[in-house]
View 1: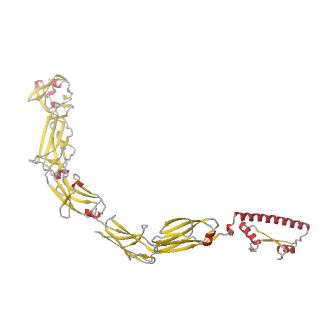
View 2 (view 1 turned 120 degrees about the vertical axis):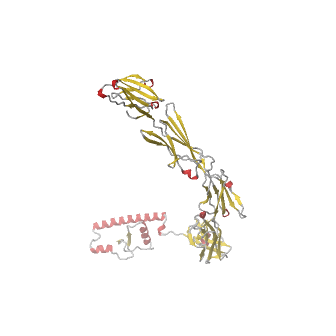
View 3 (view 1 turned 45 degrees about the horizontal axis):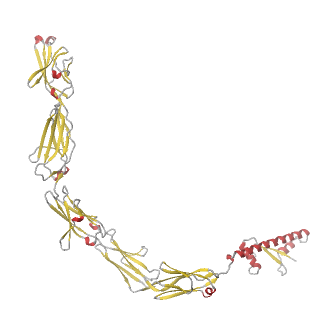
Length: 589
């Protein structure tokens, strides 16, 4: 018989009973017993393959095979016993042997629960870290604890492990353990787990729990205070954060202070969030510069720490533009503009005109040969290259003074009698001049690009045609005036009226009819033989002599303007050129 048989709870245990009888005699019977409290208790009596007697606790669970092996089904943890097989063989006597039946149940995976409230490094007692529980196992398992992968052993005043064992009604065990251990600030990153160990078929097995981390409370040892954005980039108008950080858990209470000129400290805690450690400074000024202090208070041990930082608010102030000479400027003069400013950082200077276009760099701008047109508003732009966005501007007006100068006038102006026309006069000057007309009308005055202009609407009459109009512009430094001449507009060849064009068309039609009649007469005479067709005859027709009694008719196929020119030639004003493909017909009396 095997010394030990292992079977899982709920399975079937098979216990063999092998024996030998001399002479191949048959056995009389087999009896099975089990040991309970050091007493032998009969399990069953077997004759052949039949179970004759059966223990009440095992009724319905026993079976004997052909090899005399005893099978016990649906085993429970109570079946963990020593079983004895006894064989009676008549004259050969009796023999027996025993087997230990081990029933096991693999424990469930351990459940670990970390302490929820956190653990303080300054706790007077050894604090609880976590609990571990393993359920429904048999036989009794063992639980061990690990921190960062290393097994923890009980140690006086440092590590303590308390275990509890519960026997369930099913006979299975539920095992729980609680870990107590001292912690340090380094344990804020430590992980813990537990492992349940059990034996199976002679081998040690283990099941691990998940890893857990516990919250560790510890006082701050170091404090940091820094400016956001970097103090080197802070400029007037910025919003600044002073961020205070401490390495304690939980975070301590933060307080902020600023050192005054008399070395006293102004409490700024009302402007800060005491829990987050952030002091917000909005729209900082030059006066915001100075030494700031963050102070922490640990409510656990009332320990205080502090840290200082210097806040530098960069600025540009005192932007000033100097103009040399400073006396009033006249046209043709020159001027030098100088720009200066104060700042704790290096500055660059730019000059821009009134349209924003950069005209020069450096802190000086030289303007020569000034005119009314070149006079303008210039600005000095001061820039701090090391502090993005830090800049200031100062504007200066370069005014050129002088009597007015008329720059445009509508003269001469071609007009017609009784026509309504606009007279225009434009001038430039500083101080701003006034503009007047010597004739009555409706005036509209406006300013355009440093110029003053006036449009006068008048009706043309005989006096206006005779005398014209006078535009007078004046200021405190003098006056200028110009005359506008009005001329009667004549009809030119390229600007004929519709009436004249109609007359021309009628004349052309008459000429065409005359030519047609003359052509018919010539053709008729030619047919009657009245007109010779020899070369001499042709020469007489095509080359007429210049005689006073001849009638010359000019025929052209050009456009209307050329036809109009032909009529003018007939009146003696102009004569067309001979190379214009003209045809002449000589009609003799």
